[in-house]
Image (cartoon, rainbow, N blue to C red; front, side, top):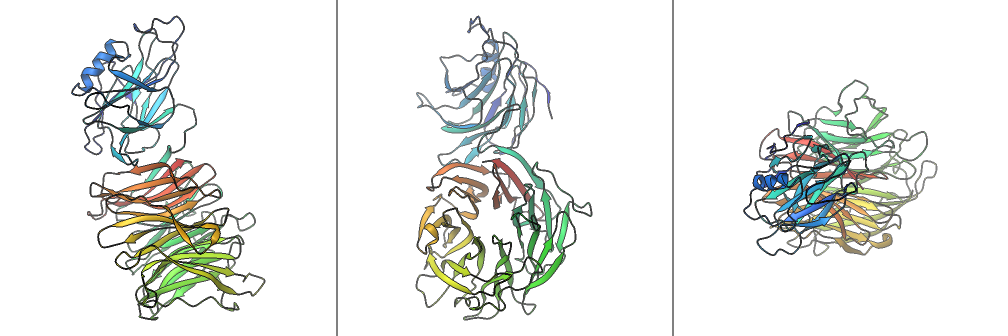
Length: 580
């Protein structure tokens, strides 16, 4: 919502996080500034970004000073940072007094900009505060500032500058700023890497638990979630809008009764060109001891076929943790099954299914699929990935009295020569134990493969004091792993999903802990594992998590859940779309 702003002062909403950060107003114009300090004959259409050590000077008083100077700052107090007109992260100059605590965005005529968000960052790129108050200076329209990495139009400011007055926006913090990010957009221009294009929150009565997510060829996000004793499928268009199913419902019911407390659903979409393009497959915990595999087409609210992928005794604990398709469109389900086993408890479960009717494709494979590795406690596959038609990679955990140092991240590579027309075999190429061990057990929860056949596993160690996220890499698909990335932050943090590009660029999501609360986090990692950029989201509650991350040729989509995990009925599914 936009509204007219006085040339004098405008105090606006936010108070998002209760931070002591003030924002004083923005931007643009029509032909050229002739402020008393410029004295230029030609039109001045220079965009400027400034920083200042204002100390105890209030935002309102400095705003009045700038207004009296026709929108120009006092160069004795302000330092020019940059002349860019796009979003960016900036480090403050070396302070000479108490530290830089103010930022000024300034523009002249023929310039129309919008500020989506302004964020104070720590050294790792975590957002520590956002503005709570807004003042105006020669601005047509302003809307409330959004939360961290807010959506477009979090603040919209149109030109109100004249030939003699600039437009500006100033952010003033109650404490020194060493690093900040400004999401700044010139209208009709392309957004830049790391910018948010849209967000969508599915607000429902109960707590929701995010499950799997996948993209179809049109960039439509398909996601599953639990709410609370049923499982649903939601579709969100590439522009961020809910896509209703054939029954004109916002969500499609997948399973109406889920009795086990951990049941969710995994999803995979066939993106291979051909008649099966965009077919949707969902593996969901139906009841305790039962996983059902289903196929959906388009926006249909009814499945095309369904099969019991895994059936226990009715009291067994099963989890449909991962679902993947190979280049032929055949399905692999990674799960956990409570079927007794060595030492009892849950064991690894992996099986291959036909895309045509869900039939077990390994039922007559020769050699048959390798038996589950012996364990002495609950052991799961949490994720599965494929490379071409024959290589299958799984990751999870394993606890064994035979192997010292477990529980640890347990990853395997299988060679699968079984196809729809050839009754081949399934053999284990290698099995690898990494990270964790002893008092710091570890778990692999997500897996991906790049164009050079290198395998990446994301997960976390689960020691008694902290959770610590990591990504390890098996170079060229070999069995020896090295640490590719580790956040190494104080407090708990987990890597819950990764999306791996052909060149080795990795997008990783999960959460980190700041001030005792979980904040959603998204990393873009270069092929060498270095952080290209980092984005965090504090939605105002205690339990903000990224659960799934997916990529298109130009964008990154994160699916997670936001809210307060200490208050019932306050967890909602949240989707964010970023520019790569």
